[in-house]
Image (cartoon, rainbow, N blue to C red; front, side, top):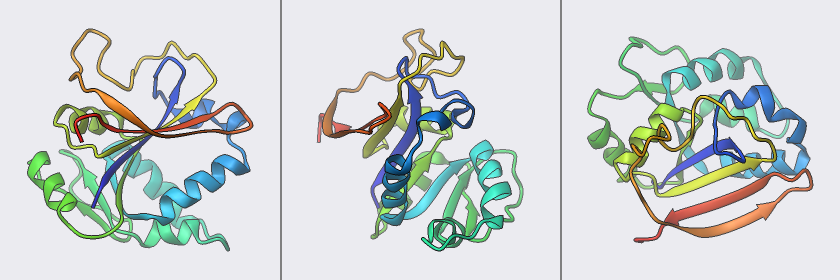
Length: 184
């Protein structure tokens, strides 16, 4: 499986609570983009907070297009050092050794392993060079937030050159940009 990290970010690359600020730019075009993304995914990879938010919301949804059905039925791999059990159907808690666990999943055949949100997990995966495709939905807003997508802003992030694989602009000004490692 290919590990695809998909993140909602502001123009200044902050990923703070996108549900609070992204809605006014999310239209049918963005919805179709996210639908296609999910339908090509084999499994989800989630950190604790994103898992808890998704697990609280998605089981109560049903839709004729099948988005909720896919979210609720697909395998979900959760990275957490504090959760002891998972209630959402198809959810599995990964062991404490992140790199071997992620490499085990990436070695499997199938569609994408989709990392959604989970900024701390994104940082850990990026620093280990485990992300195969970076997918950013860049929203036309400057947040001056508290959680930058890449590192702390103090030079602590791992430096990595990326190459643009695709770029789409939605009517609302949202940019969907995909990058791969320039080394591949």
